[in-house]
Length: 85
Image (cartoon, rainbow, N blue to C red; front, side, top):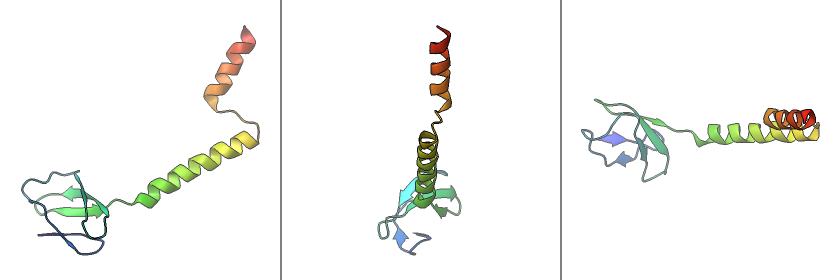
């Protein structure tokens, strides 16, 4: 029997057919769970907050660069090539 590490709900999965790295979803709390070990099966909660924070940081950096007049590196290269022509 496999239990969700978040809410302890029973997850109906055939332990012999699950693979390491497989992503499961808890039917009760809807947490995404990664199979980190088999025999015995061990699940880790995949934190969605970390992904969201990374996206927000990237957006903030891009916004600050735009406000400061800085262009992303690939756009700077394009401008330099145009100046050379």
